[in-house]
Image 1 (cartoon, rainbow, N blue to C red):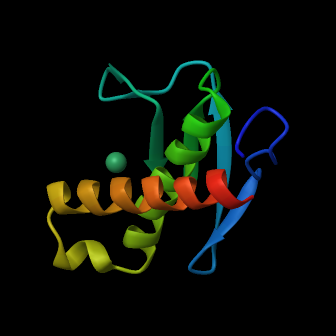
Image 2: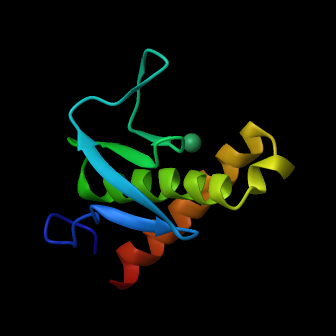
Length: 103
Ligand SMILES: [Zn+2]
């Protein structure tokens, strides 16, 4: 079950061989909009809002990490932005549900 005692989100991950840093911040802003997470693929940094509950934090982490996978694999060339959002969100929800149920 993903709760406060669950593993912490790693500080660094490898995405298709590229090192991404995961940074937790009190405020995460994209284009002037407050949000829960951002994948800054240009600088290879994933930002996650620090104050989220553990389960939401993991969901946001996977969501943003999957954007990084799509970027690094060049899969973005074959899908539009709204399709990408749906894919990363559904995949993230699926992974978190498995972690939450079985780990
Ligand atoms: Zn997204």
